Length: 322
Image (tube, rainbow, N blue to C red; front, side):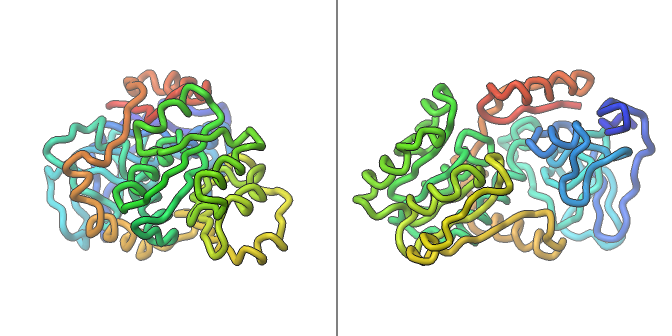
């Protein structure tokens, strides 16, 4: 089968053996894949948790049809249309745990479905489970113009946030954040953004910051979060290391929570998918929660898809179809 594989000479389409499901695994005939920032890093040889390096089939999310079911897999059957996340997605077939799947709604095509699994699972876990957002509270999404950021704002609005602030350093993308739930858009590269957030919250700061930037904005986040507020560290696009004002953190009694899928067990990931199904899946089925598609590429042009991502001018998901 065809797959997009990283080797010593970089990433390229290669012919590899079709996998077979074992235990609770399900074999998926992939029809469309969504690109993610971590994929871009792995095309350059970077590791993403335990993934990466020579021989790695790249890709983290997809939509397709169940082609074969492992002996211990439950809740799915051959022919079911599903979407999910995991590893080795950029291929004609991929394997997934039976608990890491969502059924694709009948009103959604494969291209649309493949944009959702990572965004909805990551941001429901960050905004609702770990962020503990309550109706009437205020929230800021750092890095709001990314795919997961756009979903985070929509989930915050769905859960009753009275004020959603989104940040983007790109003026064009910042101007579109209100389409996806932002009440206010700020430029996190402008030192004045903290004052703008404080002004919008009566000087208190927001109840919750979901942070995909970290690094360069760490101390500003502390200033923009209210006393006894929460910061959920989801991503580190602004740097993995930075100065941190421990005194301000303590004085404001902020709960600072780190999350990642990389160190979660499959049991924990299944629980996250279950929580999404229980809590917000009707909003997915009704298309109240959805992701814009920036551009679609054929699998043979997957290298161009990554060039498009690296140019960093897109808003929404870049999709590759098989």
